[in-house]
Image (cartoon, rainbow, N blue to C red; front, top):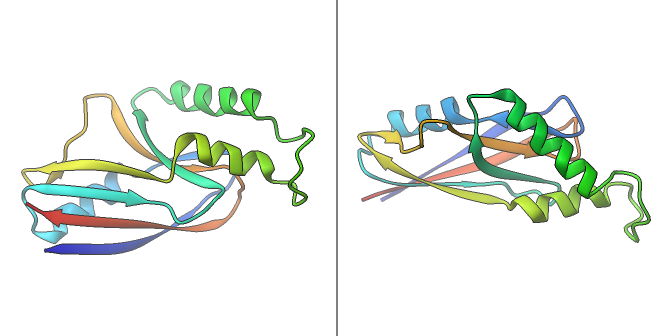
Length: 134
């Protein structure tokens, strides 16, 4: 059986990584599911989701700075809305992630965190979680 939840995420910067570990863990714990899979999906074309180092905040800064160097905000893009870089960054990081569930908790490595990736903020966004028992 599957359970679905929509989360609201509010970013405060144009490019920002927002840690989701607590929100994902709470959803799983409240679901009653002990073993399974949790899908994290971002339904936006200028945002994404990743799993990466979360214990050291300089890693998130390095990720954002590197993406901004690779895909600068001001460049000769054909897309006329001024956020072409946001679409490209979103395509590079992806719009979904998968986390195993064991003992009613997300299975993450010691240093891993789940991040919502904002590339066109500040905005209010949606994020979907789908938990499948088994």
